Length: 93
Image 1 (cartoon, rainbow, N blue to C red):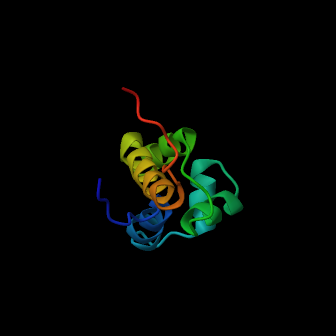
Image 2 (image 1 turned 90 degrees about the vertical axis):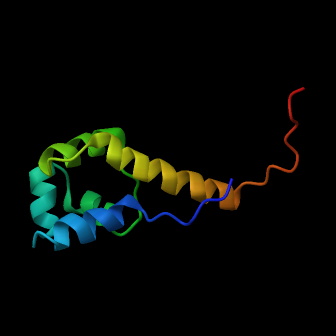
């Protein structure tokens, strides 16, 4: 399976929502009821978007939680594919 390098969902949150709407990390943190560090870590690709965070982002920005989780899963799967050696895995059958 060939997959391109998907962006971290925090990049989209930053460029497509925070920057586009002229918001600050502090304002978004307040909107979501989380710490500034939590949002900072997400937009700087240091933390994943969890299901709870996806629900909060979706509500705050009138989007879809599944969208945010799908971005995170694609990012995580791509990185796992790059960093996981499957050579010794036995195939059933």
